Every structure is written in C-alpha cells, then in structure tokens.
Image (cartoon, rainbow, N blue to C red; front, side, top):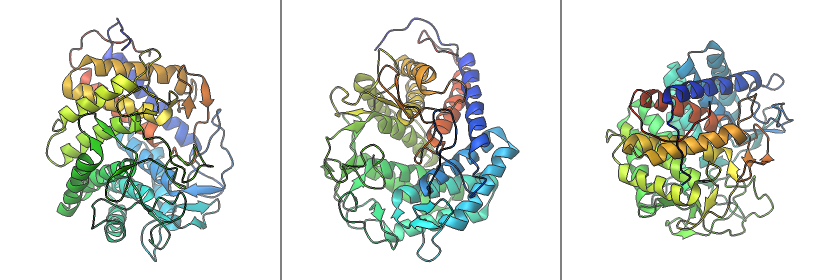
Length: 433
C-alpha cells in the first residue's frame, strides 16, 4: 500500500463529513420532488440538471425514501420529513400491488404501471425503506406494509428446497424465464440486501420471527455465498448455491452496463464494494441479533485484507470495481457506490481491529472521492471515473442510484468518525478537508 506520513486530524475530518452530509441533503432537497408527476426525480446530468425520465423505478424511489428518512433522523429537518412523507404516500398509492401483494417494478412517468414484475431486489428495498421510515415517523402503516412485504416474500419467494430466496419473478409471482430472466439464479447482492432489510425490519418490529429470519439469512450467506479463507463472495449461484459464471440479468444485475449482452456468460469475479459492504452490514446484523458488532471480526478482517491486496489502489486511492477472488483486479474503473461503501467498510474494520491500514485505506478512498468522484460545488457523486480519476460518466443521478449509497456512506462515516475522534490515533494518511 502507498505509504503516508501525516497524521489524520479526526476532528477536522468529522466536520468535513458532516459538511458532506449537508451538501448531499441540499442536493436532494432541491431536486428530488417531481412537481409535474409526483414521486421523486432520480436522473441528473453532470451539472445536476434534471434529465427527462420516461419511467419511475421502485428501487430508486425506495432508496430515496430511505435516504430522506435516515437524513431526517440525523438532522431533524422539517424539509426532509416532508419529502419522506410525500414520497411514502406516492409509493403506496402507485407502486403497491393490492391484488397480488408486493410492489411493481416500474411505472411510466405519469404513475401508471409499466412493468409489474416482482423482483426481490425491489421488494428488499421496500422492506428496508418502509421499516426505517415507519420507525422514524412512528408510522404503524409503514411498518405494517414492511411486514406484509416480508410475508409476501416468504410466501412466494422463499426456496424451501435449497434455502434462501428465488429472486426474479413476473407480476403474478411466477418465476421469470428467458435469456437474462435470472429465474434460475441466486446472488450475493440480493441476499445481502435481504440481510440489510431484515435487520431494519427486526429493529422496527421486535418480532421474534423477523429476528429468526435475519439469523437464517445471515447463516446462509456465510455458509453458501462467502469464501471465509479469501474473504470474497461470488456474483451468481445456482438454486443449489453452486457458483456460476454470471450473466447480465435483464432488470437487475449490471444491465445498465451491458444492455446488449443479456444472458451471455461473463468471467467469475468478486466485487470489492460488495464485499466491504457485506462486512459492515454483517456487523450491524450481528449487533441487532445480540451477538455484538465484533462477533465476526476475523471474517471482516479477512474481507478488508483481500480488498487491500487486490482491490485498493495504493497509487491513486479508492477501490477498483472487480477482479478474481485471489488475483489482481481486472476492472480498474472507480465507481461511486463501491467507493462509498468502501468508506464505511474500511472504517468498520478499523473500529473492530484498531489496524491503521484500514484507516489509511479509508483516507485514500475519501481523498480520491473528494478529488474526482464528488462534484466540487454540488456535492453529489459522479457515477464513474477511470483509475486515475478521468470522468467516464459524470451524471449525478440515474435510475439506479437514488441517493442511497452516498447519503448512507456520509451518515455512517460521520457517525463513526465522531466516536473515533475521541480516541487517540497514531500516524496515518493525510486527508483533505
């Protein structure tokens, strides 16, 4: 790893991340509401100007609802609460399938159902956002909807033969078929988001069933989807959890990257961002389950070490997109969400181990983000750059982003740095303010 010489001023860095929370908050307060059609706008160009949208995604709407709810909890802002409240009402009035249960995947711009598919990716974020909004707003309606979504998933998507959940369904909950349908596959990505969702649902309800299902999904991921020696997860698996060459799945997995290669096999790789994200989400789940956030510290150390060896850019800072589980990275681009999750993942590893290498990696990732990914005046993150920071996709929002990774990373990093700033720290990386 690139060696650094200047000590971090954690108090100053804490203030910097607090400022970043506020600039993200301002970006979305100013732009998210769709005055013409209701709901949220999600797509913005490199200057933050709204781009015409011909559809509204469940995924991005739930992610923005979660973001406004979490920001409101941290900031106690009436503007944030209003945006959360109006977004919640729009989502319930337009995305909810009252006949078959669950939530539609997309609407047209005017709010009519465009794609009624029941993708577990979207259902997981419905649980996550509704449970969070319901807890923060003390809304029994929202918590009940989160619980009903959980019940629909267990009824329609739980794989009673092989464990876990099937992931891709048509509108009537029949399993999707055809090239790129993904009905014959399971993924770490979506099961990790179910872990995230069940964690927040258990926290909101206190229901023993929700705690039990959280424990089950945790155990399944650890046993079937993660290599404990390497600290890496795969991308896609058979229904029996044999790792497969991944394919582009039409409505979820990297379809926005490779829209013309649906169903074509790709190289087996591991995602550095997903691995670090899983590490800190595992700590959160362990804590909610009463195991303590340090319960899986050895595994979290292994995950972070693998990223340091192969996924972290010691020259420029930041993390690459992906590579083989035990070899050099093959995709050296820097994407916003992996680097946002790396901030929290590295900080979480540092909190649990006091290993300064992880704080160095956090510092280098933050430095790269400030220099290249974060818009210098608007505060939101660009989608993707090259290894050295040249802008590849400068958009500040698209159908998939929905404020979630960036606002969550800023909130989590600020909260963790607030605690760490009260502790003595040795020599480590220089961090820009």
